[in-house]
Length: 164
Image (cartoon, rainbow, N blue to C red):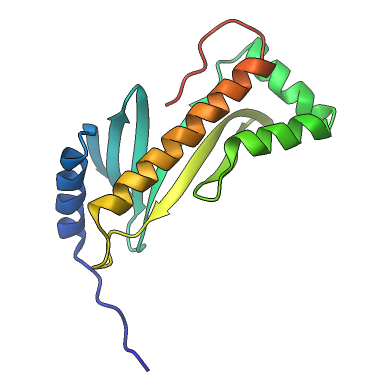
């Protein structure tokens, strides 16, 4: 029976992530360490990506967030949910999911205002590498771009759909 797996120290993990982000030419926009959470906001291509760790957890979440502007876009999106439109829900799920990523709705005031595409990474373990980070970032950005393209086909034309 194997004993507990040794974890890397939090400061070592942050240093390695910083180095790996530089190696894959991802721009660090901001580092944070606030309360129970720490991590990075980075830019990959045109998209901001969040890498966030809840302290004392053995993983980071790599997240691509899409938040719709208040107005006709949110109204149109929620009208599909209110109608329980099965075709829409199927197409939306297909656009936002992949075997490499998960997705969740962002709900505010009982209404869907956006989506988060995410993938977990495990940089506290010694077998984590720059390849794992690169795959995770590329997976959420690729799926996020597909999700944005889908939303543009079903929402009224107007404001740009922002990824945050």
